[in-house]
Amino acid sequence: MAELVAKLPKEQLNLLRTVATSHGTVPRDRLRELVGVSDTHQFAGLLISINKFAKNSGVEPPLERVILRQNGRGPRGYHYKIKDEVQTEVREALATIAK
Image (spheres, rainbow, N blue to C red):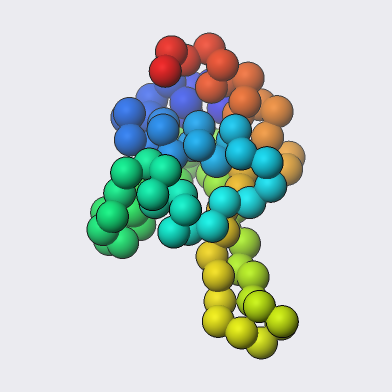
């Protein structure tokens, strides 16, 4: 995971750090706001590039998308979190990278 974090460009690194330092899941709109990306296509590109960097580094992508519905039937809400099995590893790798 350290190899992946070391390879990530600044925008992707900021996104990963934001999700890793939050408690629980982060709603998509809030995450876009926190990383300063207003365009939905640009945000999707950041997520896709993290996955591609992970696959090229030989590790599973660390981000997990969680779909939540209000009252079980309402509109879908997309939230993101670090996968439980790599959460500690991601946080340790991020701690070695300067902000």
